[in-house]
Image 1 (tube, rainbow, N blue to C red):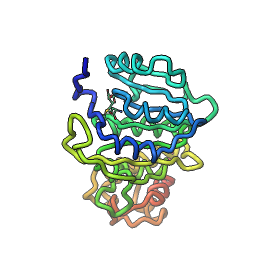
Image 2 (tube, rainbow, N blue to C red; image 1 turned 180 degrees about the vertical axis):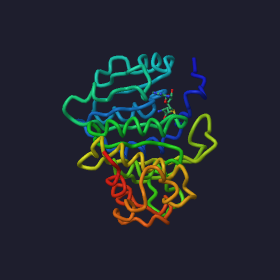
Image 3 (cartoon, rainbow, N blue to C red; image 1 turned 90 degrees about the vertical axis):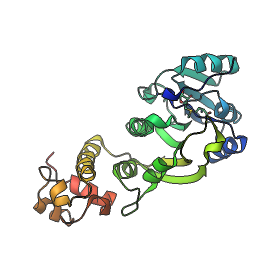
Length: 257
Ligand SMILES: C[S@@+](CC[C@H](N)C(=O)[O-])C[C@H]1O[C@@H](n2cnc3c(N)ncnc32)[C@H](O)[C@@H]1O
């Protein structure tokens, strides 16, 4: 019986073979790779990724799809299917030595918290290729002064380099999403940021973009005084969207530990 797409699980299944091939070509899986696919759905990407000979761990929340995947890929020893929530999944439990290459046409309703969950485990990740809402990809790739620049842009830049690869129209999915999608590549920096620094940058970024129309002098009140901002080389009259990642790191160093 054909699966009826569930909106609450963000199910928009890829139907365009050309797009599936483009994603797999962008990932370029090698037989020695350890792949993780988030939300394999009916397995259209899974199937193509497995063609490379790589091992693949798939994490799927929908138990009906898990059952269908187990039937479809019965006997494929290189595939392990985990039934569960990717937001709670600890990649360290499956990262034995080599780092993981994470792939997925992600459920759009949870994409931002899911990205933060993955950033928390960046030390075991080699790279990530995701289909997301184009707007989220634009935010991931935006730099200071760009229209889409915000909290996600700064935090993503702290962990990795983001590259927009290509856009995908709604007609390539079933059911069709209301928005345009895009594929992004995220490559973690060679040295992951330490937890203390992440916490401090996050505190400054949340406060700054929480009141993005205000000057930093006002938005960061209670967190940093003007003297500390000047010490970090930042104009207290500037606004959140004008500051680069380096500026935020500089400001966060002025916080009391
Ligand atoms: C956009 S669909 C993509 C399906 C398939 N990869 C494709 O391209 O056709 C998102 C998939 O993620 C699954 N999903 C939703 N929330 C999830 C979660 N928290 N953890 C793991 N999988 C989830 C959905 O059930 C669905 O299969």
